[in-house]
Length: 110
Length: 119
Image (cartoon, rainbow over all chains, first blue to last red; front, side, top):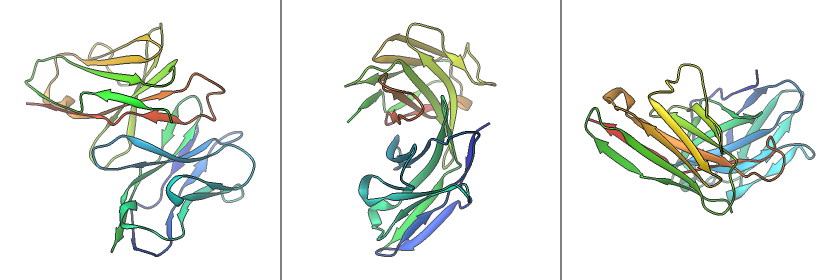
């Protein structure tokens, strides 16, 4: 079975500092990996995806993610975090259906 | 971009009532839609996969007779919570996948969710 894990329940950073949200995956075959963000009482918004090709994937709102096959990781990054980035972030792997990680709550303090 | 509309946003009703939630793809055709349930500050739990024109596929442990799913057109799926009780209170989210192209490399597009509160 395909799965992803998010080892951190919470990440706290100061505005302007780099933000990293960690994700590791376990799949057989080629992984199709996604990052989504959820704001309170809202659905999920798609940020970016890795299918194949370049290991550095750029997405929405200045986010990017680095696919690392040897470490089976797909960490989400933003060079300079904003207060408005405070939200719940989900890593997911897609087979026919999405399997989500447990989620990481990001808090960016002013 | 692909937009999924979910209605209603909030529902408060008495125990024993049946509640219908609609999920519409506004600018694309969705051959497959998904229904999730989410508890506070937790991940999404897939309840069922809905395919247009056929019966929904339910995940293990999800009561088919409690959560009725209908996907009658390429743009509309509905979830009906029948005879709802307080334990059914939750945040329900639908998503849809664009029918074009291979499925695994396409993101799902999510509705804004429905907050269901059963008194």
